[in-house]
Amino acid sequence: MNKGLNCFLKIWMFLGFAFLYLPILVIIVMSFNGTAYGMFPFQFTTEWYSYLFTKSELLPAMMLSLKFSLVVAFTAVIVGTMAAFGMQYMSPGLGKKLNMVLQLPITIPWLVQGVSLLLLLNLLGIGRSYFGMFCGNIICVLPYVVMLVLGRFAMADRTPEAAARLLGAGALRVFFDVTIPMIVPGILAGGMMAFIVCFNSFCIQYYLAPFGVRTLPVEVFTLIKTGYKSDLNALATLMILISLAAIILLNRLGYSGSSLFSTGTKKGNDKL
Image 1 (cartoon, one colour):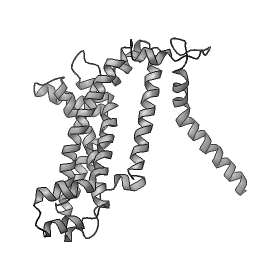
Image 2: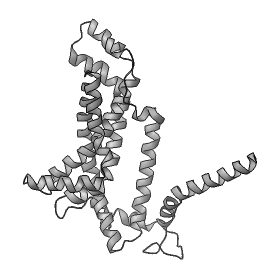
Image 3: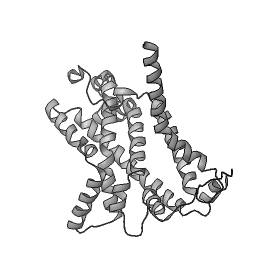
Image 4: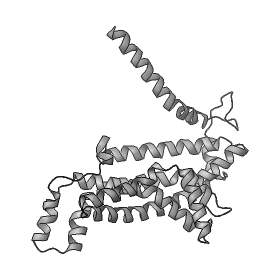
């Protein structure tokens, strides 16, 4: 009976992994298909990768998304790190409530956020603009940065901070020379997470981007409606490889399981 159960579970596990990764494998394979729209019969070629970087309309949209996501990630890292640092010195009740408020955007569908932000910006007279798109993406990515930095604070030994203060170091010197080096892995992980989330935030960019401006998610959505060539498969393959590299780097930074989103604090930190 145990053998039968184990075989059944293995089959279900295989089917589950196939359901998750077979579409990705199909995209990668079709990126090397010579037919224009990724149809059969299969003809091996690498021309779509050269087409992607020379003639494809996807390249300008990709460069815009890269630049915009870097700006959003950089800003979110600064604001999120400051917020996480301040929450360490709040009363437990206030810090917990603020943490719940910061995590609220994660629970709200991006479609609802995009529409509500567009209505708010129209009421303020701002409308669809780079500034509105920037603010909308900051709202979406900031909770991830705060959670990751708080998780690093929870894992860090705060004794060196107390020792530096006892030796006469000022608050700014303690922060830049002691605190920041302790939480660098959390800051880097938060920045990478913010970049990935912003790079893929279709709903926010679709509703808030200025008229005529197309980021990569919006451009891909438009091409899917009007018909696309296999250069989109080539772009998707490159994005899969970049995402895989980011995941490997995140794991090398030491984040896994519950520690990734831990927002607690070590016992005894308040005594330092």
